[in-house]
Length: 113
Image 1 (tube, one colour):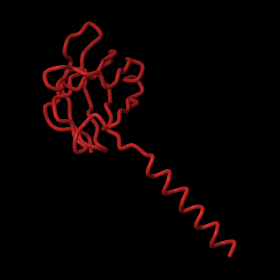
Image 2 (cartoon, one colour; image 1 turned 90 degrees about the vertical axis):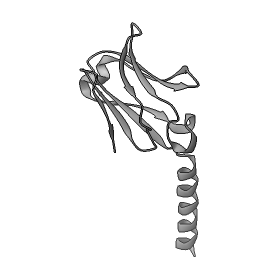
Image 3 (cartoon, rainbow, N blue to C red; image 1 turned 30 degrees about the vertical axis):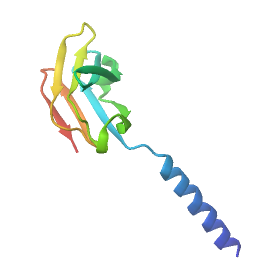
């Protein structure tokens, strides 16, 4: 009986935890400079994440939730901008849950599975 109760409580906790997880996508900054990533919606840029150059040196990832996107994917472009406002890279393809956008120093970028 004790084992059954313990298993039931454990299952309830894990289920509750899983329900609170947010699906995420990520941006990997490999540009060597600080960048801001914007999601373009109806012609307006909305800040998604800011990544400074120290993140690019260690190739860490900036995370953002896809709650800003409909159906789990972006509905507009993603734009990476340097701190002076100049465009570093643009992603016109959809970025979906559990995918990443890697941005290189030369402005090339790709979607990571």
